[in-house]
Image 1 (tube, rainbow, N blue to C red):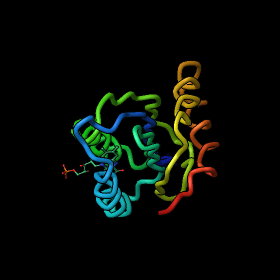
Image 2 (image 1 turned 135 degrees about the horizontal axis):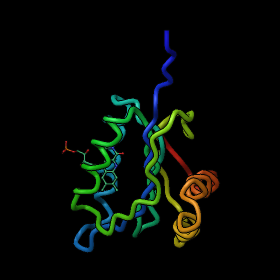
Image 3 (image 1 turned 180 degrees about the vertical axis):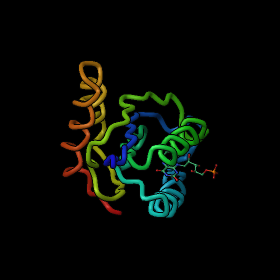
Length: 136
Ligand SMILES: Cc1cc2nc3c(=O)[nH]c(=O)nc-3n(C[C@H](O)[C@H](O)[C@H](O)COP(=O)(O)O)c2cc1C
């Protein structure tokens, strides 16, 4: 008998609100995300600083990958830069899906960490969360 450990797909990216989009689309994105992420058992967080997004997304590999491809094609944002893309049996970094606001320039530290080690970028993202007034 073999014991199989369920694997987990994890993405971390930064992107920019599309130039033609009012920041009110963020509310629309959050409504869509809450419902679908809960249904698909996706965890992580979506942060917005008024101009840029940074999102950690993790869950069952196929569902997480399919959503990430949809997010990349979403015209409400642009310049999507993938900082982390892993598939491993590690436990989730977050147990639920959250959203919140980050200070301007807060994502620069995450982006810089990713240049050295993508896993460090995920930890920089987690360190930022307590200052982001999160809701679920
Ligand atoms: C920055 C950003 C983050 C998003 N995050 C999520 C998310 O976590 N979950 C989700 O279901 N949709 C998210 N979306 C919306 C998806 O891109 C897509 O519109 C949604 O899944 C509906 O796809 P569909 O119209 O093909 O069904 C996000 C969009 C943007 C621009």
